[in-house]
Length: 221
Image (tube, rainbow, N blue to C red; front, side):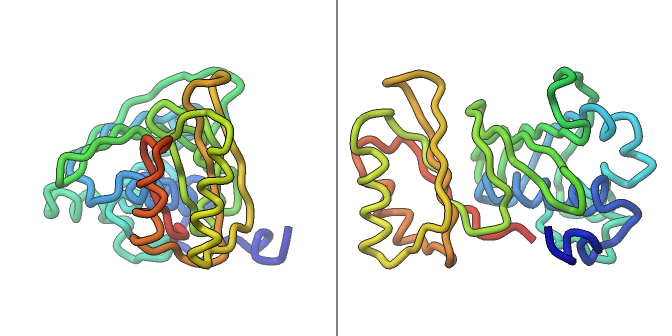
């Protein structure tokens, strides 16, 4: 932990967890969808559900879905701006169990170009977030670094093929984690990189035979 974790992010308040973290969760979900959001159903769990309205969590989540940063002065009027932009949204409360973080949210999104995605994650303090699920697949990343997400066949050589492509293209991997449901099924790689990854790099990974889907999320504001 460093001094910026203690002080917290530059933000529109009142809460780094319920407001700034919520903005970043919305930004993450938008980035994973890969296009502007047209429709959003947003489910809140725990503290987000119980005290979120008082902390402006609902406004902050919508602000994030519109791509705004945590210090955007328009956040208190995010609903008005969303209506002007044609963003349709709804909220509901859910209970995903005691094991989940109390500041948990799940998004069901449809984009302006009809893409769809489900994203779940939590605001874990000081404006920091953890994404824990994408399209029903469990994984984990923070959005603090440019991040490549793959959905791929779990077979020998899959990891080395992806990392080999990135190495040849000069992309340095800072951290990598692999997740799978069962042996020989589908798996996911989360690769955090030292530099932004361009579309050509992602296209090269997507051409690999075992890749079912690949996304790039450059650092979340």
